[in-house]
Image (cartoon, rainbow, N blue to C red; front, top):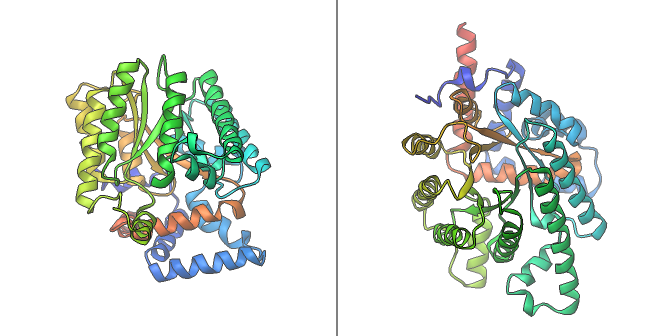
Length: 389
């Protein structure tokens, strides 16, 4: 029986200082006004090049990031491995547009693949397509590459070249790679590229994984179509299932541009589709390898139960759970304690470069109902438990 309220298991490797830092961070993140002010202040500090390292690194960076490089992040990875939790190194640099920077990101992703090849604690690599091309190229390609101008086509072909290089390296190293989902108005282009790479590299097993955001009302049907296509065209499908990360932006843009919102009408619909997606991939596990990226206790228990009912071993590498570093330790470590395959996303990169990611993560925590209060209540429970000892 998995008990997610077992804080002794969840925080076994967390010092009293770790818990104290997490408590104050989640207290601050729980205040929308404070997060909004912090975002403004951070952006202002970045603009005037104010030194930020002294306050960021020992606080929010330490909580949610592994380090500034692959090598530095391996310390966090080893700590996770001691608790039977794997690592997904996530180079969390956003918004680059210079060709040299895009090439550098490509090579950094390949660096994570090579580290994973020789490190059993790292089962996957991951990247965002907007890390290796400009948003503009993807937005234009979303309407179909046949409509691209000659100059846009050059940018698109460069994207394909980088993407294929990454996927080929992953295939050669036998390291599965996640392609993260992004905004709906560039996702069709990403889906098409993920399909093309899957067709090429997933002939013997799932190497390329596309990400499906179930807070979109059309994604469950999309998943069914992708499974049918993989079976028909005889390749293995890899999928990462998540609820989603761009809800407010999606709704605002739909309202502004006056088109129907792609987002589910409410949380209940999202939860329903996410759990239905779990049921679907479990029954199709001979054709689909999956990672359930979720901080939701009910969905995590549902997947564990589905695996048991379908006679899927808890350590089957085709079925992974994943959470973010610094969050939902009660889910990650209690699952791993029961023998399930669990990985933590471990973001890394130079502090100033990772700040946009950290700001976005703080905003997401603030907007997800109950997320921050749940983290706080578990930390408080563990601190009280330790005082009674």
